[in-house]
Image (cartoon, rainbow, N blue to C red; front, top):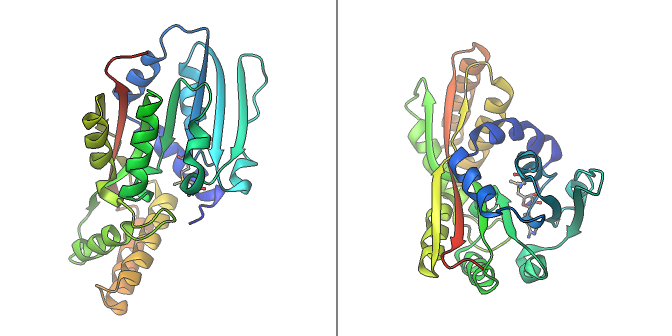
Length: 267
Ligand SMILES: C[S@@+](CC[C@H](N)C(=O)[O-])C[C@H]1O[C@@H](n2cnc3c(N)ncnc32)[C@H](O)[C@@H]1O
């Protein structure tokens, strides 16, 4: 599954606003006062997590930005050393997750990845990070809760279709979709991690037209693909919702969860 740089740029503003401050604070605090830290950002896209965390970390920073999309990696930031170093590393995390974690790493980060992965891959991720005693900051996993204002009668059926689509294969096997963050938190707790979690919902107001249109169009396509709603009803729903957006009468809340998981006995 591929993601356009334009889409990642559009969502980054809302992601930045949504990131749960307590979870970010816990992740940054866990780095302590080490003079230098190495952070592996998995499925980095164009570097959204790097941009969100970099200003908050006072140590010298080495970032390993990992993704399998070369066109996104090519847009990764290139800050000036020596205080911040960035290395862009092309890795298919489905195949070579371990390569992304090997070597000296102080923190693993990821955003908007876990809802794409399968339960099997998640288990491997937990096992491999726990074996290396690595703390993990995982932001912006979609949780399936959507609130649209004003409501339309077809909303629940469309969102049910979206959530079913979220569980289809995104390149890692059947995806965990809305269940991803909860599954990850439970798995980390089972292997002796302590977890700080918090909501990181996207909130789109009437003025946030572009992202609302993108979301609604994507949802209509996903619901259509799942087949639970007849095409004329999907089209009618999308037309009606687009008119509300255009009239500045639409707001949306899209549920996400952030967590920071840390081995209880730290190294
Ligand atoms: C929703 S985007 C999130 C990007 C970025 N973390 C952000 O928050 O803007 C998902 C990312 O996962 C990457 N991805 C998907 N499958 C992958 C795989 N098998 N190996 C590495 N990266 C992958 C995509 O290229 C994309 O950059």
